[in-house]
Length: 368
Length: 254
Image (tube, rainbow over the protein chains, first blue to last red):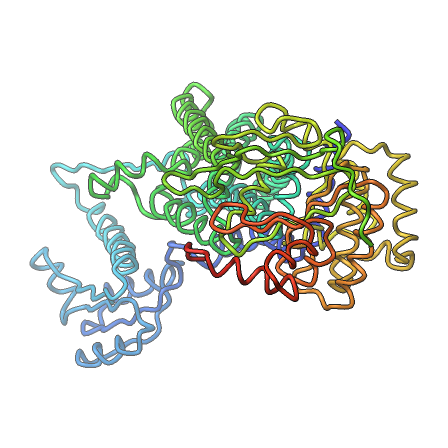
């Protein structure tokens, strides 16, 4: 037991005396949350637009005022000639042009039909479809108000409620994603690097020649990282609650317990990586390629899994972060209990067992 | 510096008989047999790839032989590897201390691994630091020590728990000649206290310092005697010549 503690103390000293490690451990979660929270958002706000108003009537003026008043758009310029539109798009700053035809109000009132042209810069297709959607909604609102004055024979009005995330905030989606990524990086990458570093330095050999059981060498290397990962879970949760206003709807205890399970899965992966690599660089690359990239692509936090081709959907099932992402989203955002996530939890437990098994077998082969 | 060799069987601390290790079709160590006596400095030589690292790994209990027998410190390599580990010290060719721990922390950590109590560690650690003249540096990181000092510290830590045998795997690689000489003084001193030294080296001048030397070629021991006898046997001026005469026969690529 005294030896056990001595090993853990030693590991903490390694971590605390290495500024690079410290920075990754504690800087990364904060940097990522801030990056995803404020820089890499897919919400479109204050898009710059131009207006080509050939109508100059009361309706077009009212619509322009509405577009300007909305938080999604900033009217950059009002144009008077249609050939100027192509020029303004070339600057790349303008996302949308709204074109009112001549006699807009007149046509609308007399023929019951008028069109407004929306021209978007589709070099960024996501933004283009988002801004056209926002603009259409504003046009639709205006139309509804006009109709309200004259009763229609039939009308279906969709009433939309966005469950769990009424404001459609991106943070609700990426907080679970960032948690999966950070825990994977710290538990798997840092642990594998820490073990491989001892191999590189030759100290691992000395430890294996000593009477200390090999299992203790490995377990004591992992324990500090479990501890640090839990600190990171706490940091991320605090940041998301107080900085990004993402509330924790479900049980915190359940959330922490599931995080611990995922940490163990990641540690097992890290151990596995450390048994197949011999240098810190390779361990780091392997972690990034095998863990980080699939987490970004296949966990569903950046790209919806439902839209992927079938083979990719099947691959995504083997990515542990996908299941953890689901768990965090269900517990934290939807406020669901263990009943709804037992399947995901079981998959993570099974994955952990498999990784530990493979890692342990590899480790033994190395010793032979 | 040569001591009288007592070849009494009671003083055998390492015994290998037809020790063999195969990796698939490749026989790394091919039925080697030798004995090492208490308190002697036994040089274990061979070109790269001759199989000496493989043999050494079996003797220090981290690899199991494919065939043959071996006892180290009276314990069997097949069944008593854990007891062997307790009774030997080891220093690898790679530098084997933690650079980001202080000298005192390294002593405490590695001493603790071999089961030294806190009180023992305090006394022995202080004595060691004093002997090496490192009092002023004791609480500095090992990274700040020059390579030669690290090697001496590494060796001192390897024998801190009074092992019967200490295995040194190319301990002086990359060290300047003067420091190497000082290092060998430490080895002699330990041998005089009865610690058996099992050492591999690339430097043939170091082979001259050994009591007995074995030279491995392609997995087999081709020569085993004192440096003096080997030089007579091969009509050579130095161990370097002896080594090259034997190594020339090697068929294995490095």
